[in-house]
Amino acid sequence: MTPPRSPDELHRIGYLGPRGTFTQMALEAWEGAAGREHVPYGSVDAALSALRSGDLDAAMVPIENSVEGGVSATLDALATGDPLVVIGEVLVPITFVLCAREGLSLSEIRAVGTHSHAWAQVRGWMGENLPDAVYVPTLSTAASAVALAAGPDTPFDAGVCAPVAAAQEGLTVLAEDIGDNHGAVTRFVLVARPGILPTPTGADKTTVVLFQRTDHSGGLLELLEQFAVRGVNLTRLESRPTGAAMGSYCFSIDVEGHVADARVGESLMGLRRVCADVRFLGSYPRADGIRAQPHQGTGDADFAAARAWLDGLTT
Ligand SMILES: O=C(O)C(=O)Cc1ccccc1
Image 1 (tube, rainbow, N blue to C red):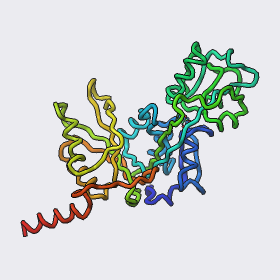
Image 2 (cartoon, rainbow, N blue to C red):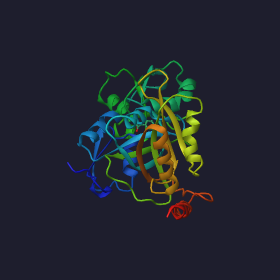
Image 3 (cartoon, helix red, strand yellow):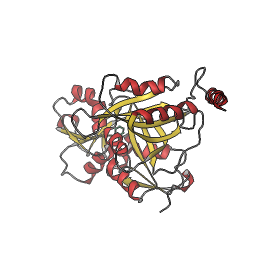
């Protein structure tokens, strides 16, 4: 099976479903969404497995939230297993409603179902308005709405989801805009099998996962200085357990710039020398369009001039 080589060749795109999730909104907001098949999956792992096995050409998954931080299910699935690469990102503003089947009032709610990231973002509202409600995890926000609409046998009597999911399922909205942080934004990434490298735009990001050779003092500093000395700015840094042993961590990092930018490429070469493994997870245009401002001595021309100078010393 030949992997797609350009975004035009992506026909079947999966997403964390069902219909009405924030991830579906992200996929619809992606500039290349039109004219492709959008396929819902029950979990991030299911969508990424389908992508790895070739059932999908790409998948949209949540990766980071402005309030709750990284989405571990996605970070861990990308850090291990057959390689995948990020080819695009989308930012979605998040608004939650509390919904239930018709006829139920707020005071009758005993248990609330939703995605763990949604629960973390409405915890304050719940503490004030439903302090005794039990939390029941669901695989997505829309999954709670679909379950409520399907019948009375749910382990929860209300759900937290996007307004569109409550409307689609014909549920009653008991409270609107219940997020504790009204400016919350979630970042979603479009992931594909290796083979597609979006062209540099000047406003790009690169994602990598770094595995250290040994645990030693200054180990993280040693990794970060590969970026620092070349003027590469980090936009996200998270440590995640590798699962190999207690205390064994890898670092999941986003930086400004494209692997084709000399300062980023040279940083990755430096990391390749000092790390046990560097997993390249793609270079792609930034959703916010913010252009990198390389400082003096770190532009492509500076690296090329330094290389020409060195070549001149040895020829
Ligand atoms: O469950 C959803 O709707 C998702 O797309 C995942 C999610 C959950 C909470 C906030 C943002 C994204």
